[in-house]
Length: 393
Image 1 (tube, rainbow, N blue to C red):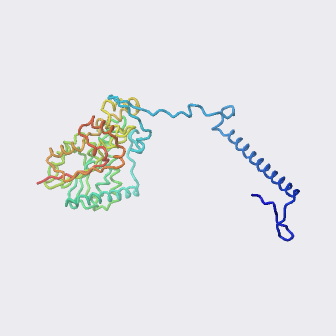
Image 2: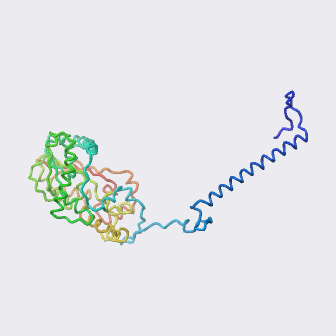
Image 3: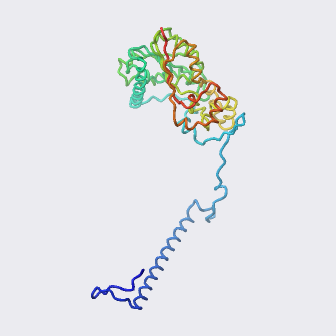
């Protein structure tokens, strides 16, 4: 409540305010309010002027315009209908999240870029760490690749092979197939000349890694072209066979496992880490669709129609990769192939992802198992699988 008294400047005592004084104070207050209102009005006019000049709110005539109804409409989600009548909503940007950098698979094949010494040392350190984890795993079963003759399948740049010698392998025979890298490239033709050129690229890559490894260790590594599905390696010639991200790409995994059993010495073992087809990212860059587990939820015919309708520019290379570079080996299929090879399985370890498990739905599971009856939930929610095999004497 406002006071009707004010302090006297003479003696500091409170005295009643005269009517004239009250009128003067009231007039001053009114003027202050009018001034404040004028300043506010001026600010509002300035803001309105700036908004009118904003290009986002101006038409070609310079007049402001109201948002159109179309700009306020939420677009309908894209839907793909499979041959069973399932209407599947597509997820924008899913492939970018699951397989970042997937666009590289659509580029014309070029010579491999040779990494710098620093890049080679960084990658070697990554492999030292990975091999350390694998070594700890093998120790649980009283196994080791120290002082052993190792065959690596799918050697690519040789970094793993050189890291294996650093970790104690007595020798490493690193195998690969240049034709594999050629076949998955757009518009590529596998020929003798193309294989020679790709092998030359691989040799340059491997030399870059050899240069950052002590020479006494580098001399333990050799490279060879070999198809493990019909291997030319001598029988009983390896104490250990190892691979990373290879098993899922083998055209005949049952033949490959039989060959691994033949190549291993009695008592030898094999370790493989792979990204199975049925994992959420198991379609790799070319066959990961725009809905979770799309490559596993569609039949072959629906997959081809999906490419025709939604990815016509990728159809040729993606369909070739789908048909020739990804096998459909489930965990149950792996067990069956191993049993036929004569090897045993001391450990089969699917690395289940809780995040992928949370993304799985009953509908997705039903669609996957409808197309691939041998598939189980562990196949779908395990982006990485470790398998340890052994050949008994």
